[in-house]
Amino acid sequence: MAKDTKRVLEVQGLVDEVRPGQLVSSTQGRDTGRYYLVVSKSEDGFILVTDGEYRGIEKPKKKNPKHLKFWPQFSEKMAERLANKSKVTNAEIMAEIGELLRLLQG
Image 1 (cartoon, rainbow, N blue to C red):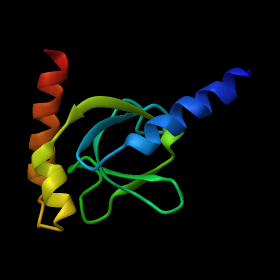
Image 2: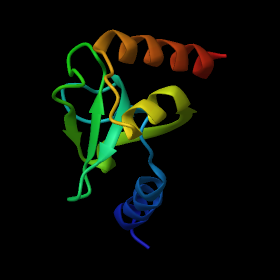
Image 3: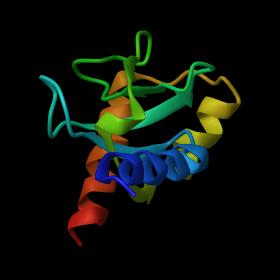
């Protein structure tokens, strides 16, 4: 199996499991290394993400899942609010990302 095919299959498995409120980071593009929270998965297979600073919740960034690293950290509070279509502020998004990064670093 070719390396690229294997990578696509790994990403496809992760994309099926992605959920709102999950921590991801960009692996490609000008935003490489930037952390985001998943807002939703679009119908065309892209992932909509926000960091609350450069990409606010009102205009999430559309990322190819191949260009994201999926972290196990997850914000239940944000997931619930996003699912209920409750108002979420950019400051809350930034605070949640900071908290998830603290958990990630131990």
